[in-house]
Image (cartoon, rainbow, N blue to C red):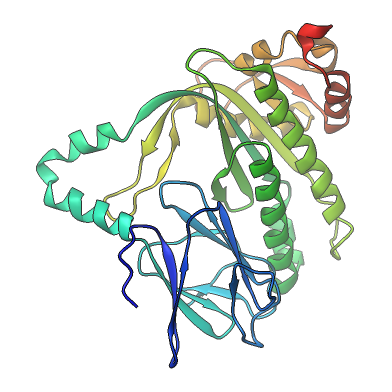
Length: 333
């Protein structure tokens, strides 16, 4: 079957026909034996709900195994954490092979190669400076889990957590920009010069939902301890665009705003709280009720920074109090 679209797609070749699943019109697609999936494969080696493919825009597609019994493989390697698919990758669900194609990425690579003398100009066009909030959520003590859980349980746990985290973040107006081992990074874009109050509430409501979801998952699996997550949130300007190589373009945000969000998440362990936010994020929260009472200021040394950084921390328990007290716009008080 010839595909003339520039959109990414999966191709399933069988003796009878070639089946094509265009990865367009949605932000994620489910794969499995169950008839409620977007891509139904009648193979007894495939779980009813086997895997999910998620788009982050600009033709970047992640594949996430949902704890399937027989596993998901990319080019022969089992997927236990989310993996970015590349044009031409062979994906195996159970015993069924499909091919992933991304014509747009292929065309971009060809264009950059054929115009190597203009490579710097082409790259600069793909970047823009945006005001954004970056959220990083990390699963605590993940290394300990990998040592104490069998592969099947670990895969089911991670797949389920990533799937539900993706749903929560999509519902809050963002997407998972990066899956990094046991962590996720999400971005909320704001206006050119300011952040709306409702945008901030969406972010903190998403954090609260992620916390509750993680707590519930602790009761679903035979774990040596309850799952815990830490969260870092930072607001500021960053460059958005293609940061990858010619062969592997990677559309994401880069800059100090992003780096600090990761460092802030790490510092939650140092300050003994669940959430650490940057000073700019806190300033945008200043009009909300009881911010000074619920968020506590700390001075920390972030890795890679020469000077101390001011951060504001809060526990998940008091975040819920904060959200409850600010269910209406703070300007209405």
